[in-house]
Structure formats: C-alpha cells, structure tokens
Image 1 (cartoon, rainbow, N blue to C red):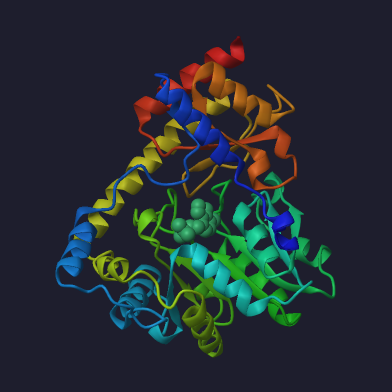
Image 2 (image 1 turned 120 degrees about the horizontal axis):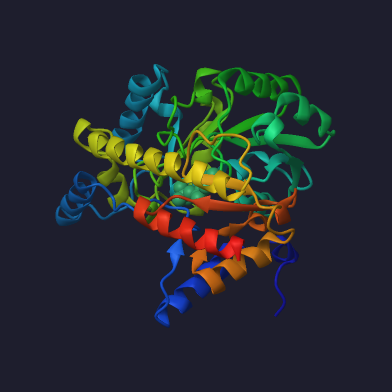
Length: 385
Ligand SMILES: Cc1ncc(COP(=O)(O)O)c(C=O)c1O
C-alpha cells in the first residue's frame, strides 16, 4: 500500500546515514573521532538518575496529568524566577515528551493546511518536517553572518505573505550556536502580534551559553510560545522530557492535544527531573557548561586556523557552523571523504537547509578536548593532502 502524500516531504536526517557508516567503520576496527553528534557526551547527572530510581522503586509508573506533574510545573516556574527574574505562572507550563513533543503540539495547535511558517535556513531540520506533518508550508528564510544567522523582523517582513501564520526561531540556534538579543526578540514579537501571527522561540540550548546568559523570550511577552527541554543542558536526551510555556488562553488547547497524542510525558522522567534544579545538580551542570566552553575556546580558533570560515563567534549550544568553501563546493562529499579517509565524522550543511548548504559543515564539540585535538590533526592532514 502506498504511503500518505505528506511522506514525500519528510526528509531523513542525512547525518544518521553518516553515523551508521561511522559505526560500521568502528566495527571494522577503525578509530573515528565523532564531531557529528548532537547530544552531550556526559551521562545524566547522578542526582537525577537516583531520583528516577527512587520513583521506579516506589512504583510511580502510572500516567501523570496530561499537562505534567504539578510539582514539576512549579519547579520549572521557580527556575524562571531564579534564573531569569521572570514570573511564569505554573498554569502556563505544559510538560511534553522532549522539545520534539512540544514542537509537534504547538504546530498542531496553531497551523492549518497551507498556512506558512517562517524558519531560518540553516535551522533545525525537524521543524520543516513538523510543519509538513500538519500540512502547512515551511518557508526557509536564508540567513547568514550579517544577522548572526538569525531571523530579523525586517527579513520576516520581506518574506511575509497573507498565509504567514508563525515565526519560528531558536536561541541559541542549531546549527550555528548564535543567540537572539532581547531587542530582536521584542521586534519579532511585535511584528507577529501586529499581523495576527505567533512567535515560537526554541530555547532548548538555554543554559549552554558561554559569554553571557541568553535572554528568555518570556521577558518580552506572555503572548508568545517558548519551547525548552531537559535534553541538552540537563543531560537527559534519552529521558524524553521537555516543556512549553504558552499564553494563558492556549493551555486548554494544548492539553486537549496532549491527552490525545500521547496522554502524558514519561512519568519516571518527570519524577527524576524534579531534582534537576537543585543546587547539587546545578553544580554538576555548571561544571559541564565550563567544559563545553573550554572545548569551544579550543576548537573555534583551531578550525579558523585550518581555513574554515566561522564569521560569527557562536555563544551557545555545542556547535560550530563553518564555511568550508576553501576546500570544497560539495560539503556532503567532503564530509563523506573526511569520514572514509581521515576517520572524522562531521555533519554536512545539507541537513540544515538549502542556503549555501554545500559550502558549510557543522562541527559538534560533544567529545573531550584530546579527541577534538586528534580530530583537528586528522583534518589538517586531510586538507593539506
Ligand atoms: C533546536 C532543537 N530543537 C529541538 C530539538 C529536539 O530535542 P528533544 O526532543 O530531545 O528535546 C533539538 C535536538 O537536537 C534541537 O537541536
């Protein structure tokens, strides 16, 4: 039987094929430096694991309310007050299966067939596919160094049509690691509100910032949607837990969708995450943040010295998005060759959009400095032939 027409639009993650090849090479005994992996190499902090084990031992294995455990929603609200000085009513917080679940809910809530969603190109690839899933139309806005690889209100205006319904941005962003300043967030929100559209800000890499904290869009307005997750800063990718902060009048719709789509986010994960904000856990997370910063501070100048062009210093996440046109005009073939011939895995730009994708690659610093050094040495030998 044939598949639904929308499946024609759902792209695979090309890096997955690359990762599979890297694993196959490893199985043959080759040593591969992994600079393609988009998750922390650190395990979940011990206090969170212990809380999950306690919940399991206590038999806390049934559904939670669809919006999430009330204690967890309260803890997230406290976190916004302590970390950002922003008051967020716990009633506006919806706990979800990862930021992925959050993105799915928000798009299902807001986007009708053929409505347009403005996204950055390059940007997080799954967003385009989520838009297709609700039969909307993703509109990639080419972004480059001039705007820190971020969407500005002026660019959104240029791409605006009568069908525009949503603006989606991320700060810090994947694949570029760049941030949006509070004034830029405010300008985007103003535009969206003035035109009867909505702004969605993905803050999944919040906490992983290295020069200054990223402002939360919640400081700008209560009328936008913020998406966040326990995956990255909190080191809980496999626990599948995230959240939405929604405008107060939108929570009921999200609750109805959550009840139908997945009933509730994973119960054990929610109990475990209750200790994610404690001083003990935060101390571990801050140590890791410092480790990521040291890696960035090593890798960024090392790649620039090799001839990769990284015009905007990435201030967050764990990615460097580099122009590799000095070496190739086919970053996909370049990544493939680098893996096969030098044993270094990176992600080709093609995974993140179309805009100058063939001239770009993404490096992830989700491995320790000695391995990054080994990777840089191998790349040096590869590009100097
Ligand atoms: C920008 C961005 N948003 C959302 C996600 C989804 O994360 P999760 O579902 O693990 O919370 C990712 C994962 O890499 C991401 O990079």
